[in-house]
Length: 148
Image 1 (cartoon, rainbow, N blue to C red):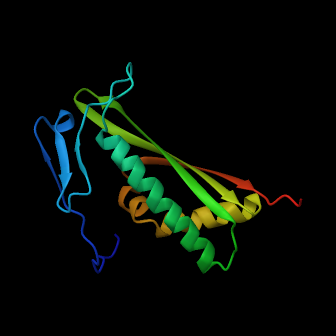
Image 2 (cartoon, rainbow, N blue to C red):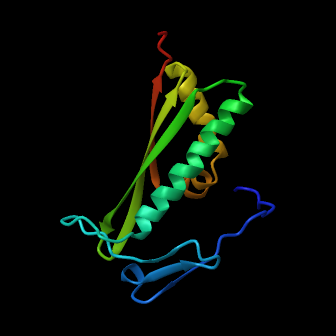
């Protein structure tokens, strides 16, 4: 079990209306948007909870990746993380999420990038929150520097 954190920041948001087809707003006013239920046939015209989760997870994991590199004393030229959050039924009236994190690391070799990603997975609060609850796949691609 993870130790209880010493909280230094709390995000607060409220959902109203028809849940996934309702509205969400953060207490600080930075988020204020209508939501729509994801539909596998059409392209959404509004955000949905999975999109918000993917945004948060990708940013958090990228920060953890860069922090892990720094703690390992590895210089990276940069990194990006793309999160794909899927939702689907696992049984009648029960749904679950899956996550794929695509990590691109620049200026290092594949083995080093994988080692950093492994450490980032232990550091990232989102990874720690979903571990054992959501299937998460991490795909790491290293892009070594090319001499000009």
